[in-house]
Length: 255
Image: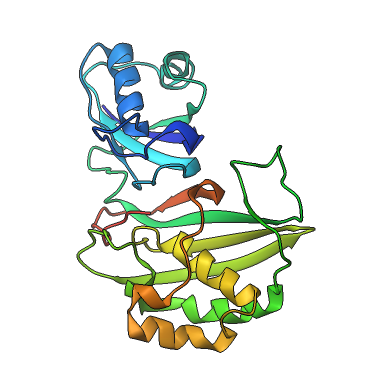
């Protein structure tokens, strides 16, 4: 039986999605709970390898199990075995060829910035707190350069393992609600830390440290050292993964 699980998690105490020797991972904790539920060792595949500290409300995992359980067991039953910072919010039976990563046709991340002169104890761990006001219109103008298909080498992590660096950004909206700004980014796939590096670069524009019209040259230069800082992981949420019929593999994805 092939399953598609939609997951929500607080990334604060995880070293990221992928199983690692140096700490507690989302994948590892989920696999342990699935094994307890099914009585068999199961490997799960995630739609995206979120980094340490990154949150999710729409991460997707796929897995195959021999034991047939009602779908309710994959929410109520599995959640009884998972820790409080990880939950299965939806379980669906999927076609046998479904793969959470290879079948994905795009992802949406939301990065939240809070403009505040003093720290916000209630929002910490969910937003990037910025002490000085940002020029929203300048950032919106600059963000237009990221739309479409480009080589995003200048905005990937130094240890990014992707074989190709061309990605297509379908949407980049900056939505303001009072002192909060949400950067809503949809792309076919993401390079490692690409979304956070986009935000960090746009924040430099918002603080007049970088001209809004300079981003096309930044992309053309393909030099990570010329881009802005990597925004903190805790402001980022994997919001949704998009799927369509057919399971051809997209580019490597590692945000």
